Length: 435
Image (tube, rainbow, N blue to C red; front, side, top):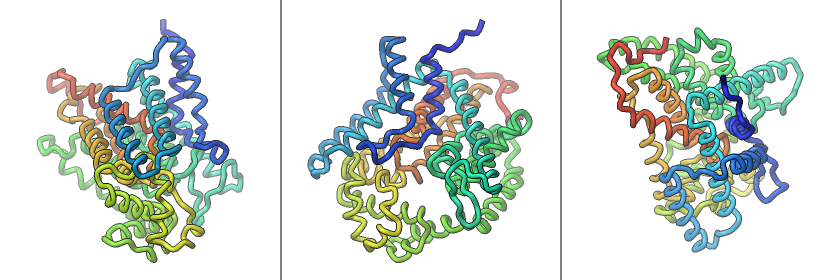
């Protein structure tokens, strides 16, 4: 008989759903109070009452974060920046990482089941997003309207369109890795999820889609010359190139972000005047790049300290941009630098960047060991999260939101299970392209 879930296990499942609960109460408390915090607190209490303990994350994670915390403490103290911003980041990282790791623990680290919960929730959120978008065009606005260039940018239950895009990315990449299976057995779910993904009109969604196609080809051996599938790659890639080119050239929201961003970042100098003419998303990323660059140049090894980016934002901003830009754009994304790479560069320097990049690359699953359908499935999950993390590195500087530590721990666990596998199956049992 199948055992029913305990209350704690249901709360752990709710913690997985928190990936899509990125909204927060802001301005009322000294910190952003995310809507999922009560679920997290209740989960930890229930877990402790049930098991009598709270399990610590892996040693590598504790060591890496402790290094960043210790150096961050001394750097912010030395620069007279030590205060609530530092404490807030330390608490947020410790709290959310503990919750997510223990949610995985109470669900017995059953990665397939856990990821299936995520896929189900992604479908629910995407279905709501598609219906909500259609209702906007019918004049029924159940959520806040985001109308740009005659198009309604969808963000559903989340705070921003690109947040929704990032949250759906692992599902999109996973479905692409199993395209044939998804098309045969879960067509409605797949089409709904990818339609909602594209309705964000986010350049991040386009990049996620392109990377998803690449990893779908990679995991299914299309780049393996011995499999004889290489000849089919142009047939698959050509429609993708035409589709992406069509979106970039014909959707003004995507066109502006693509061309504004590339023209600014291909220059070696800070172009304040040109940045002021760009779209708000590009300006937010570019202005934070200027602040992060200065912080890194001043302290390349350790940065300006954890939580310091918003504290140095205004002073450095006014070095490059006129004060009226603050009125036009506001201090956009000054809290999180608009990008994890920029934020790590700004606050933790080379030490933090190298620790993060090492873990990111090291936990990339080795494809040569995916010698069974089960391991291939774990590999598809690993690659889907790789793309998710890559997009966060580019565009989302918040250390904790959109389930970052949940996905990072799953990323690590899928790598661990694949890397440590010593099972060698006969050739006929080895996985082929998902059917």
